[in-house]
Length: 356
Image 1 (tube, rainbow, N blue to C red):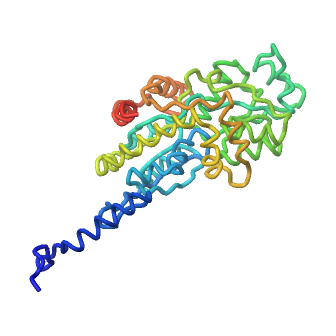
Image 2: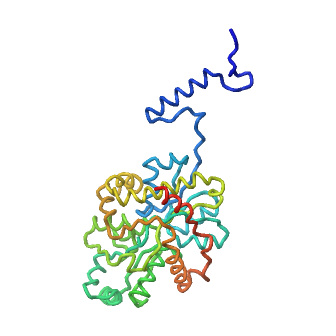
Image 3: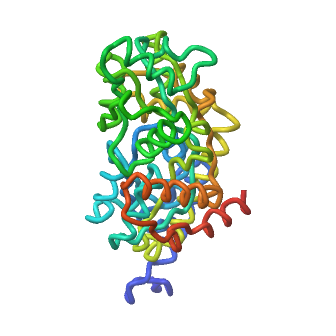
């Protein structure tokens, strides 16, 4: 029998094998399935660090919709309690992507961590809630300064307010609202730093009188205890408050430019889907954030909350980030303003927005 001119003496596949592979690919495509393994590039491992808040929802939606996989990414997610804690993971090289508040990233860059903000996800997320004991002093027409003064007079002790560690967006936002907006007497409050989960529990069990919380925690705590009052929204606490961002290490961006663009494409697409189809995305978000403490209906309500503002354009938070950093210097959380040059890289967002 004559030998096949495509035979494998040189290591190339035979014509029969090639035709069989093409047939398999066509069949698979007609069923919406992946083709043969040899036709696909190996997925790129993507190690993502997140804070479990609603502002991180676009990364969860992008994953559940299958868009990260379509971009050639095999994502794994690790949860953190605060942005400063996550920057340590960036510094140690244990995560590639940071999904949390922007403020700690300038500090990380100043310490030699080369990371780029490629897209925002949400702004003005931080709110202040008061438990029943404190909430009753926030009557209409009563300023924050008066409310805290009245509480201290009635309780005989300053109000305890839970927030995240110094240098974080929640901590900075709370202090800005207390001292700059509300003109609160520092003798009337005690700021207590703690993790996000601990903050939510402290509010629910009455271990503190108030706290900075983001969605879905706002909806969860108010659903469990109707006496808890939403006292201030993010825009009141710190105008233009920069919120959650997606930042990627420069090493990953350089090594994997195409998958990096795919990541941003997916985040921008997910942000738009959250805005346009909350009922569709709510189950995805609940699966990521629920942990048995909430349900899809609660997530759906949180998405409609005035505390939920999803924004993808990273350029919109550059100036608010600089303003927040200036205030951190005033607080002593930073020794000096750190350069933001090089922290924001909008080219991925711009390409994603143009294509969608």
